Length: 108
Length: 112
Image (cartoon, rainbow over all chains, first blue to last red; front, side, top):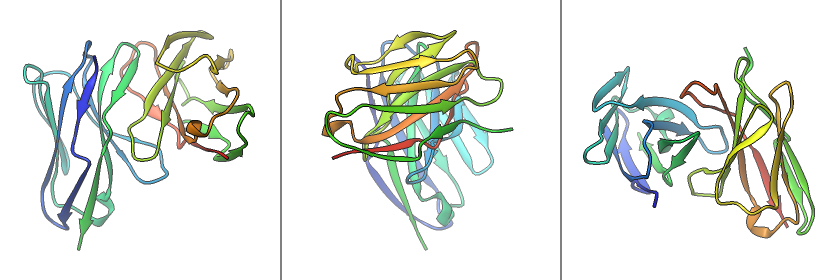
């Protein structure tokens, strides 16, 4: 079966660091994607990991451990505009398999 | 360079009706996938079109059908609408040979 788990909601303070975890069990694996989605808008691509390790891109970093079926998205120097849903997705054959998303609220 | 364009933005239909949603892929992309996103959930894969054929399908009934045109644009058709079909329908385009997906802003369908 296909199962992707991530926390439903998280809160954090402006300027802080937050880590959003994602665990997965899927029958295929073509990489791990993270998307950001503001309410009523399109998901926008944040990161892609296909090999184990940390990928850093500005304030956002993503980590993957294929043996543990585990990934996290790290957001540094949080800003109010980072309040959004963060979607973890596993690349399958010709499709993405999404988790339910983590709604992050950033407070001043 | 236009991204993925979807129309209409919002739509209200009555139970039992039929609906057609449209998607124009990002310039240079040849593959279109459709996803259904219910409120508070992650997107669920409906199907993918490449070379005007359905290449893969998710766990959706035959009421959901699609089409891809020679210019790579695509339509999603849903027949005999149910209240549970109310959702945000997302189109994602990509290159057949690539891993990058670009999403449109979606069509918000409400079935009453």
